[in-house]
Amino acid sequence: MKIGLFIPCYVDALYPEAGVATYKLLTHLGLDVDYPLNQTCCGQPMANAGFERMAEKLATKFDDMFAAYDYVVAPSASCAAFVKVNYPHVLKGKHACVTSGKIMDVVEFLHDVLKVTSLPGVFPHVVSIHNSCHGVRELGLSAPSERNIPPYSKMKDLLKLVKGITVKEPERPDECCGFGGMFSIEETAVSEQMGKDKIGRHIATGAEYVTGPDSSCLMHMQGIAKRNQLPIQFIHIVQILAAGL
Image 1 (cartoon, rainbow, N blue to C red):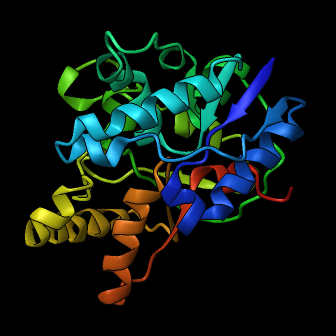
Image 2: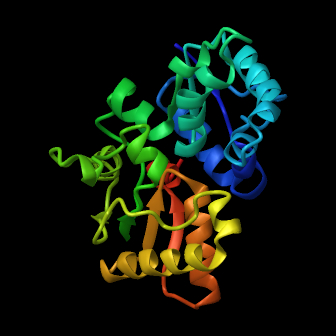
């Protein structure tokens, strides 16, 4: 299968190590991975801010660029969810959307498509899983508590394949961290308090690291933890899964 690697703009600019880890892991697993060099933002910031028409050209470019691949894989649950869930609406009547059915977050792809049973990583640390809202409720990376269905976690399944790791989850495991993109800008005080509460629950697990599928959520909590000198570190899940490569 041919994989198109999509690296969201904020990952490219601020957390390129998550993108590099994704590429290394997918190629280690024997996949044919291509990274289109002229890729841009998927349009999520504009659409989420209420300027959906500004996202149309970006969505059209994205759809054309990745149309030929069997799967489009991204180290970002929120961006993958935006393409999957929102592109059919954004492009309705303007462009035949094909990538909506091909895009997957890297966790989803490893778990559901490749069905990996072993990973090369060694990570001798205690980690607490952060279930980001898009990943839980739009991609199904774990069970949303409000649905009252049997619990599951694709992130936990993959992390348990890493040698030396101890995996924890906080109280209220799928509660929002307060980032929410524009929400963190428009409702700063509420956003920050939600982040403090969430970090406190992660720390209560005894974890050394918080991990998850969205660098944006991790960035939000990392900033709060740094300002408040809280004893916890943050790392994208794919960096743990690819540790040692």
